[in-house]
Length: 231
Image (cartoon, rainbow, N blue to C red):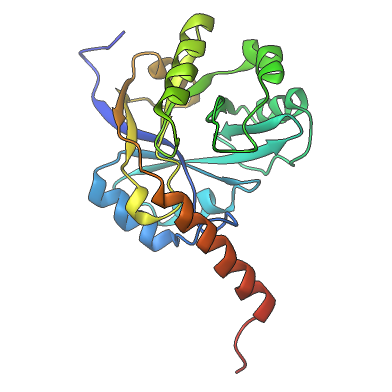
């Protein structure tokens, strides 16, 4: 329920930085674009590392950063928020959730029914850990099919789980594509409580963003192979 006494804020719960192998978005670029789009809080959720969130948090000005990680478990991807240490990949879904909880973190499931991603969580695993999940991503701007977001929203509603919203941005132009409008919060518990009164905003980013991602993966691969330029 919306609290009329609280300030409403714009929160993007899922975005990447150059710390992910499929993104080249530098912290300064990211910060500038966040400011341009008027986001109040962003969750930086790089693949299997919290480095990007820590770096952006250091330079954030006028917005807040929740440090997160999109962790590839053996059962598919799981997002941990409010982290201060990396959660290792390739654990079971249950162990991944336990590692997030050890840090007092929040568990969010990204794009659970996506047909254009290989690493979405398996339905059987989602059913197993559902009672330990704080939020399910009911709108991801990078979904190729809007029906996949709708299916996630139905699952969240049927199981009484709060909805998460994210741009899943990998480039500056994608930042601001989607956000959750929700009551402001002071801490982790307040964040989880406010999610239930959130309102979904945004639009799908389109197919071209996936081509850009593939290009960025290739560019970063070549950069690693070639190494730094000679002095």
